[in-house]
Length: 200
Image (tube, rainbow, N blue to C red):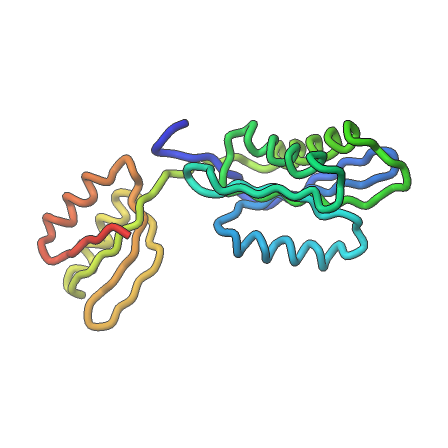
């Protein structure tokens, strides 16, 4: 796995799969936090309150070690794991897939369920663009107003992300620095002398 980039999906997407009367709707989202996941799941449960199952899987974090799966009442291992398997087969992270199932009256059995959840998750991931994003390290910058233009020029030049900024007496800016440009960026800030950098 590359330690400078990670892959995720560009935008939310919905896919549908039907098997013997049952409808499976897969909602795939780019995801940035567990709180965001809870919010998305809550919305889908409200929107599809008549559905029998809301199964899901997500993977979060650059090292891809935060994940969760749920079969939501389906037989153990028949829904959440196959959904996560699709996220992992594309080596994605910061992705959530919720599959909403409307029961069609015919039992599909565990192999049938695994196939349905796997297929609809795969369909969703095939219809949304997969994007490569830079791994960034968070730093806090502290500097005088007079340095604002110099600082922002470096931020722009090296594709850093401004996470948040506060301007009171001094400027406090939190930025994400691309991992592969870290040394250059920190060196540039040192050259400005009055800019303090602190790793978060």
